[in-house]
Length: 413
Ligand code: HAM
Image 1 (cartoon, helix red, strand yellow):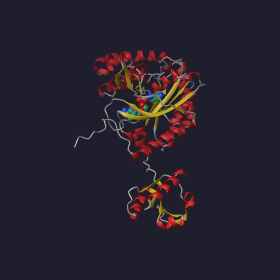
Image 2 (tube, rainbow, N blue to C red):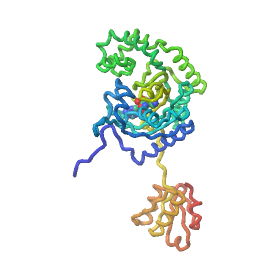
Image 3 (cartoon, protein in one colour):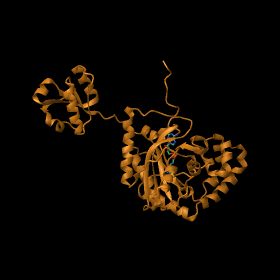
Image 4 (cartoon, helix red, strand yellow):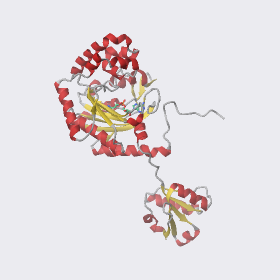
């Protein structure tokens, strides 16, 4: 026998018995996001590589190490590692800046990152996310965070931790970066290679490093002093204070985490993550923030924007498993031609119906019906002659016989 071909490392099949959970989360996303006026957008999974090197940033792990990139007709193409850059591209390309602000978009779909697979971390994973364009006011930040929390609540996830921080604007941040570099410089040679490379280009990203020796260095008091200092300019500080006031007013519980920098380069001002204690080391279910410079950086007009994305696999691992839905009816009969007609009739009323296509014995059919359906619809010789059907409720065991035309109103979907 030939070798069996298996899924690639870091990828998974989503099997029929689990798909209902995915549909449940996707339907909730659609319902909750629409209730805040967000409209769904579907962008391609492949994009020009430059979109991500310019958009996500060439000092990030995503761009440096994790992209699935290939050449086709002399063009460098990448499987999207995230979808903010793609949605921004679409916003610019389709002239959405002409629409009245805010433009509110949501998406769902697969993303690809060549990372070391582990629990909660895959190479092909799925996100649901939102992006809101055109508002610089902190009310936009508050609405987006509130909506993320309410979406998670709608999935039964009430006890997650919301962490927020402000990274300031390019102006106040550049002063902060210089101070941070000055404090870290004496230890530069002891940092890992990645940190040494990032030191000049993007010192804030050093804080994201997971190497223990680097973390020990960042815990030194003189570096912590800089990290916890208030570096925000007046406008950024006001924006952050107002956001916190709105969150307080809306009863959204959060903690401030000065070390929260996020792993992508495009963020300005507000960043946030929502974490769970039940996820092990990959504990973030949601990550997001404001990216006021990205639209112009990718060739559009100056446009403030904010959004978030959540990992579907992590969400699904946290929510209570739901049994897949049963069929409405399973027809039990040894008269295939009549059964075909009855099944089609019931389907035209919107019922989910199956019957035995292999002409198995009556008892076997009934056994199958009790496993897969809510009702067994019995169509024997007697019933056919009298233009009747018997309906057995497979949950209660009760059975009734009705005129055939009364069948639909006697079964509940
Ligand atoms: P991110 O933090 O890279 O942000 O990803 C968001 C979420 O996707 C994470 O919190 C996590 O739940 C999930 N995730 C990320 N990588 C993996 C993986 N390898 N396996 C499983 N789940 C994963 C973004 O992607 C930004 N685009 C979010 C955003 C939208 N910011 C503004 N707008």
